[in-house]
Length: 250
Image (cartoon, one colour):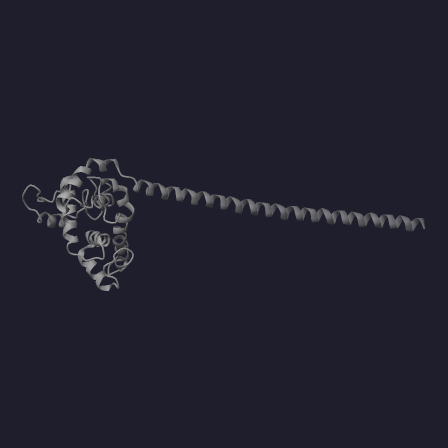
């Protein structure tokens, strides 16, 4: 009996030792799993945090140009009276001065030395060939456009309002706002493309959001630029210059 008791004690001790070893191994495995889970969580959290920071940074970067674009540059005030004088002389006392100011804003941000990669120059961003063509509209006299002086602010603003009137007289539209939209589209992309869009349109008198969204056969990049051009000027920038005079759409 005593020997059996000793055996039972030894057996029980061995069993307990096995149990202890088993639970220690289990605890070690559980701890390892927990460490891996914690590491995975920390890694995912860090990646998400970095992604959020990148998104916020991107939004801030995008907002800065937009805010700058929606402010009247200080240089604009240097040419305010010149633009108003030239616009009213060509278009009459109710000339859409705010529209033309918004157009110059879009074209050059009122930088006299502005030059595009394709060769457009000056406040009004005339291409050399177009500048020479516009010069022929008033080759002599007090308000001459002779010389294609794209670097001269007065010439640029005089040419802009004169060319806009010439284009406006050659487009048909549902109302003055849409008429100016077609005029601006022609200024940017050419009168011929305006006519082609109107022939393809179910409502040829409406430019914004309709006829001017039709691609008449130009590259997608040029179509996007031409479609956005009147929208930016009339709907985004024209209200900035409301204090300068009447607008076409406001």
